[in-house]
Length: 366
Image (cartoon, rainbow, N blue to C red; front, side, top):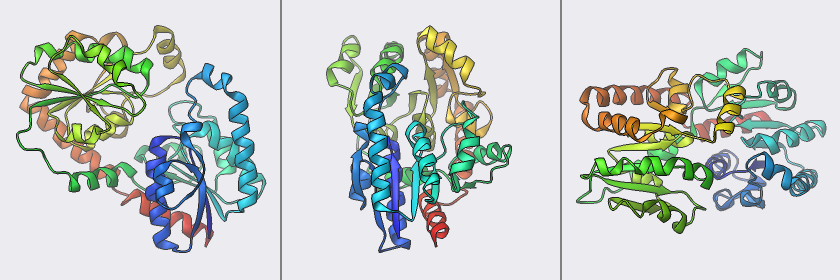
């Protein structure tokens, strides 16, 4: 069978690579082509375009690069018609994938969406389009099943792909002897968000002199950019490209809202979730995004499992208070351990997501 897969981000490249390996177990003769990154290519996909050439964030950047984006869409459509796949698999990345899915449906191709766009947070109206152009939706968050049911659109929950990724990392990890007590800082991957939050995260480090503060440096962030924030803090270190190593060694973590909050919880690390944007961006977000919580942990559990410090509440005093509680309060740590265990169970109910998703894809085209 012939499979065409489209992912436009680093996380999609990771989950796409695991999906490809599972598809090949079920269909050893599979021909796989698509858009993604090094991981998908190494898993056996013929790479058409790297996600590095697709990542345009923010309204202004998208408008400025519109000719490139439209050119990529034309290239993708032409390549699909040439390859003639038995199925096209879309991984998140809705701004690109939904228009391509419309085209694919018009051309009569079978379509699967693996890792739903976050339409439950904003742009719910997209569900009407998704329902028309996607033959099978595979979701990775438990509450997404119920959300899509409200739109009379049956979907399949396959579990969360981070479960298998983190389980494998834990199994292979060797703890370093003589480990220092460590606070992990995960300030994000974009300069704008790091500049807003990292100075506040670092400002609490003098209050915890017995701890090493380790910044997990995201790919694409310059050393010099991060060092410019660190110069007044002697107990802070920069760790490049080893976020999971940092978390495995951490006693607690200060984490930017996003997937990292879920990763931190799955490593069992007590955390404070941090968010701060410009005043204008925050006001726009409040009007557009309709969710009770900003962290995936709290959204999935439907209760405030981890503390969220948002906008003006993200300050040195509050962060110091919450971090002290995470490190010293045994009752709080026990509560978190119990909630994290329930979270793990919820996210692994579908089995390993990659294998479950591959089974659904292969069954659809057979």
